Length: 268
Image (cartoon, rainbow, N blue to C red):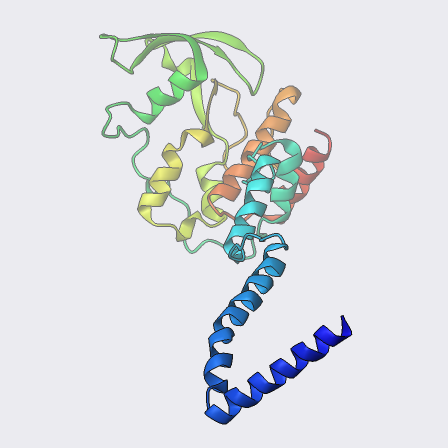
C-alpha cells in the first residue's frame, strides 16, 4: 500500500512539473474553476433556503392608524355630538354662559320694529294660525282640507291649567304669548338686530305659546323676575324655554332675571 502511494505521488509530481514546464498548468486549473464556483453557490443556496422566507410588507401609514382609532371610537359610540336635550339641568349650564346686560337700548321699544303682527308668509299660513295649529287639539279647519285657517279646537292652557274650547267666531278666548316678550328682547340686544331678524324672532313658533285670555295678565314686557306662569307644574318648562330662546338668539340677560332663573331651575 505504501509503495502504491509513493508511486502515485511521484507520478503527480512528474505530471505537475510537465504541465508547468510546457505552459499548460493555468489552462488545466481554469477548467475546474466553474465547477467549483457552482458547487459553492449551490451550497450557499442550500444554507439560505433553509431559513423561512418572511413576507415583506410596506409600513402602515399614519393615516391608517388614525382611521383605526376613529373606527374604534365609532364602534364604541364615542364619536359625534350629544343631542341637546334642553332640560332644566342643561339650561343651568346655558345660563352660566349668557352675557349679563350692561347697556341700555339705543332707542325706545316700538312694536313696529318687529314687523307687522301675524304676517302671512309665502305658504299662505299666518303666524297666528300656525300657532293655533300647534297649541290646540281636536282642530278643524275652515274650507278645503288644505286650508290652514283654524275653525275650532280645544285648549289646555299650560300657563294656568285651564281647559276650554276655541272657535274662530270667538277668538278672544285665547291669545298667543311670546315666551320672551318682544320688548324684553329689545332691551336685551334686539335693538341692534336687523329688521329682518326682528321679524323672524316675532314669528318664531319656538317662542310662541297659545294660552287662555287672561293667562298673561301682568306679564307685559317682564322676564322671569317680574312674571311666571300661575301653574307651578309648568314653571320649569317655561324657564327652560326662556333660557334657550335667549341663548339661540344671542340675547343678553339682566341680572335680576338671571338670579330668579337660577333659583327656579335649582328647584326643578
